[in-house]
Length: 95
Image (cartoon, rainbow, N blue to C red):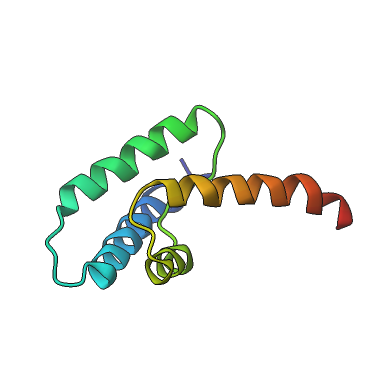
């Protein structure tokens, strides 16, 4: 436990606060279920742990771009993921 330290507790706590803050900022008067957000964050983190992923958190910049662009469906996240994979595939050798 000493090797891992307090990060075991702080990283999920900060991820939850970050996620709820972003949802609150972009809710535009609509109600949202914070419990649903926390459950979704937990499930994705647990699944990601089996694949060695980094901790899952919300993205303020991506959320702002999607909102400004008029994205209304999860397809925006899918397109973002595709763009990230393409960027990694083609731009990584340049660095």
